[in-house]
Image (cartoon, rainbow, N blue to C red; front, side, top):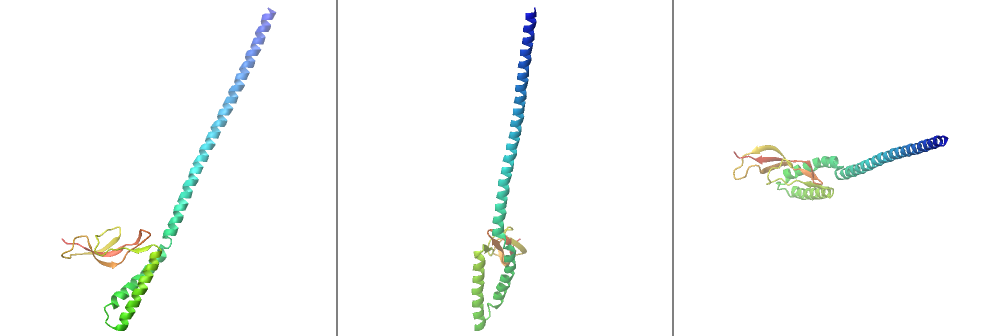
Length: 181
């Protein structure tokens, strides 16, 4: 019997050894899974941060482009006040019959053209409004006027010219619109 008892104890030890080996393997698997899970979390965080960096770079590039395109808007608006005064001056003296005044008008017209060409090189363009249909995106109606022979919502008169800077309206044209009842 002693032989059976020894065999049973040896079997018990083998079972215990196998159980310990299985338990150790299970712990190794759990550790490996936890490590893999942490690695996956780090990958996920990395991809998120990489995408966030790309989005931030795109926003930065867009902001930089807008600054380059529209950064001089305030300066140009101030310069437009000078252009308006030049246009008003020309409209007041154009009808004068004096030869000296006519020569001044020619000179002022050349200056105005050069000035507008220079501003145009920087993306500033006047909004054509006269005779066009009223568009609230480009025109600001100051008043309405009944005019026979003209269609409703047509621009009858431009009080102040509007401008776009690189296709964006920086000042709407101030106009009088035809309104026949």
